[in-house]
Length: 413
Image (cartoon, rainbow, N blue to C red):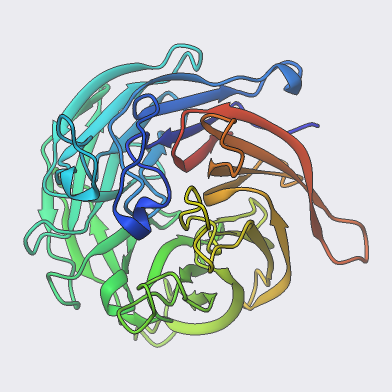
């Protein structure tokens, strides 16, 4: 296996088992929250994770960790704190407020550099293309659902918070993504089924944020988004969760991807972002990754793998598997095409990332149905692309153990 890149960086929430989403019971604690680094050097059979404590939570979108462009620093948001002493239920978790910075220049020895109070319940972090600014999305922070923080000389600066323009100011911003140019931001507005675009001026010290063009409606319950590598389109997953679904998310139907044309250079001066395409994915496609060449996309589908099964009879709606969905992207038009679904044994896979060659895929798997196996794992898949044939995925059956509860992951290329 020739998985290309310098290191995989993931975070794990050790405070709860996957079935806590259903019954609120945190379950037996297994270790501590962690950031894990897997150096991708030498024989892949010898790869292992190097870990240190990093407070984080799976109860949010799978974008809790980001790395600087050169791969020297990692940033982790704390959406919920670890439970109070003796706490056994989800209600024993407190709202998080922290951003942690780690020196990962030596991936075998990650070191905490700094923690900072950045406001109430941050759910996502992303780094500007030049590495000088961090963008934070907030689930609940009054009416300030966007944060921008300078990062210079290995230190965090002042936290600037904003109300995202043109949307309900108290709507959760699940994720904030940087356009490849560094001039624009996209915000996934989960509770209003919208994507909001902004222009940001970082040249004057204090950032200036203004709405950029129209807000775009999406399918129900958008979770995570990303710009295509060329910056021409913005793609988001839609989970179709909600109060009109039995169990809020348990009986959700198959999910959807939305592709939006991003209008960075309007011919007539009028900015118009527009829905271009939708495509089907598996059930609850929380995470996804776009290939580096911008032609393929893979979603990680929870299915109903997280339902309780420890009792004498498992929850009858459980699926004893999770899945990946492979989709094509037309780089010019943004049109999406569903290629296929690929099922595997595993619980709550929330994140995936293509390797630098686009020939392999790493998948973060929260837990296993085999209770004798402790911790989480990073699975490796092969992306098969033969001339004139439809691409497909093959599980290599190789994996690397990480701390239990892995849910967000990025690649240092």
